[in-house]
Image 1: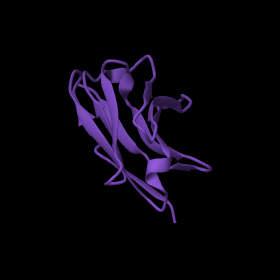
Image 2: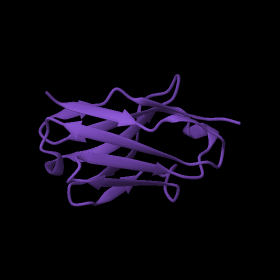
Image 3: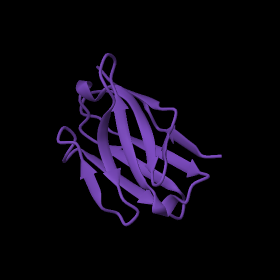
Image 4: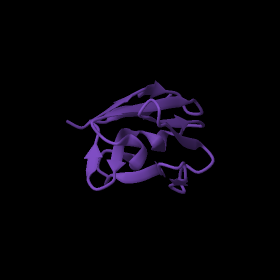
Length: 114
């Protein structure tokens, strides 16, 4: 059974930082492209960042220079370090695993507000 479990969301002030984690089980983790997506109220889900098994990364233009995606294949975990957070970063953040199939986590809420 595949599980992706996100953690680390919460309420933070503008300019603050959060680190999201996603622990995966039931997949050959190092073979999967791992990603973070987000969905704000009334908007479609959008890509935030992805990282290949070898560590190649890609980011949405809106988060370049502020967010960093990383992975620890030994711990089957992917991370999203979010700095200089803005109110427009408020969304539910979802972990995604992709190889021959696509899997999603349950999401974690990130709220950026003063």
